[in-house]
Amino acid sequence: MIELLRRFGGKFRRYMVIGPACKLIEVIFDLLTPLVIAQMIDKGIGAHDVNAVVHYGMLLAAMAVIGISFTLVCQKMAALTSQGMGTDIRGALYQHINKLSYAELDRFGTPSLITRITNDVNQVQLAVALGVRMLIRWPFLAVGSMCAALAIDLKLGMIFLICTPAIGLVFWFVMARCIPYYRQLQAKLDRIALICREGLSGARVVRAFVREDHERERFAQAADDQANTAIAVGKLSSILNPVTFLVMNLGVCAILWVGGIQVNVGELTQGQVMAFVNYMTQTLTSIVYVANLVVVFTKASASASRINEVLNCVPSIADEGNQPVALPEPSNAAPVPALSLSHASFSFGAGAANAVNDVTLELPLGKTLGIIGGTGSGKSTLVSLISRLYDASTGSVSVMGSDVRTWPLDQLRRVVATVPQRASLVSGTIRSNLTWRDETATDEELWAALDMAQASEFVHNKPQGLDAPVEAGGKNFSGGQRQRLTIARALVGAPQVLIMDDSASALDFKTDAALRHAIRERSVRGAAEGGLPLTTVIVSQRVSTVRDADMICVLNHGSVAGLGTHDELYAACQLYREICQSQLRREELEGQQGSTTPVSTPIASASVCAKEGC
Image 1 (cartoon, rainbow, N blue to C red):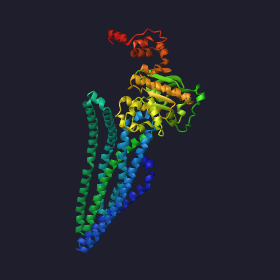
Image 2 (cartoon, rainbow, N blue to C red):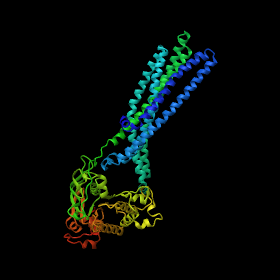
Image 3 (cartoon, helix red, strand yellow):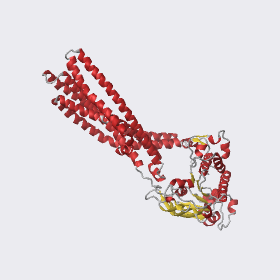
């Protein structure tokens, strides 16, 4: 919590001084009130002097008005400080999260990050607000009341010295057992957020598989687990107030008993006894509120540590000190490879098996690389190394002849456009989604990108065209339309390298072929116009999508099982041949050039499999 105050509290320092100062003035009036009441009793009521009663009554009213005025100022300062710090912390968290690499995002998890940026920041905001308003009030009121009581009578003051440690002991007993629970509560909130996110985002899948009851039960278990922890800590916390008020009331009884005897013998006045009771009540009530403040600060401390854990997480991918990379001149572009991987490997953590293992390849400018392999073979991880969403654990990855670690990230990701496997659109319009890479793109450039992505037809059919609304996640578009819009978005801004990570899986074969033809034409046109030709990386599980690529990389468990053209791989790579035989028609397979291996059709393979009982 102190670290957050140092980091974000500087600009609110004057509010954190003015607020407690105003609250201190209010406390001073609270401490003077029992003395004024004592004078009213002794000089007014006891002496049957109405004027004295009115005089001291007006004084109390004036003190109350002044105290309320300073309280309002303090409340204003608390609101400005807490809301301002909360806004700054959320902004810093969101900004920092966007700097984290995929590795850190995988480690924290999306649900946990959402909980930290919402619930945890709320806990810190509450603590800051109460800190400005109450942190100085209750301790100062407790100490001031005790000192004032001791100044009135030392004998009665001994009652304070007995009651206060008794309450402190109860307080220590409860807090020592509550603090671990508060940390568990935040972790269990993460679990609830995870289940909510999975259940709501995958509502269609849940209903399709009739898993509603299972999801309800899973949520109920997580909610009950969190509730049981909250109940346990609530039971412990509930001990504080009853025990504290029991001690306080016993102390008041003792004061009245001893004070009554002293009044009878003339050592104290009735007003002084009442002042003593008021001070006793203020002191022990203050201790109760201090206990409640500690509960709030304990929760905030747990939340602050979770916030600091994110803020102090150093991104594993950084570009500080990297100078802009000069792109190759078109006239001298031939010798410079567009992409180059040299013994590149990557794993998702220490001790984990390599998701990408010792990949070496080189792709010239303007050429197309197809990447194919089974599910989990490392295709998406491999292309993530090119745009530096992950950093290779060993080896190197270069773009345009320069290691990706030497590129400024902004420049690298403008040169390398990525179409993710999952089509992702945000709420707004088609135009606002397409201009992510280039906010200054003209309508002509947007339509050119849509034409290339085979998306212009359905956008033209929208009454509002480019300004047609897009719902969150693009839910008002079909899967194929979403994919084509994300491809168009990547093409805006004239990238030099286009990565399509299985981003045409929802397209029919005709549209897929037209898309690849348009991209090849764009590459040829770019070279003819004196610019750099477009280099393309296509990840797919369809042989028909990658077979025309200049180079095909076949992955198997992260390793390269084959590298070459379609004909070369069909002749020499058993895995690629099996993939082809499972997808292509007999006529296509019989037309393979250079194939020295007998062709077996999918039907024949299925028959053999059936005979062998597999």
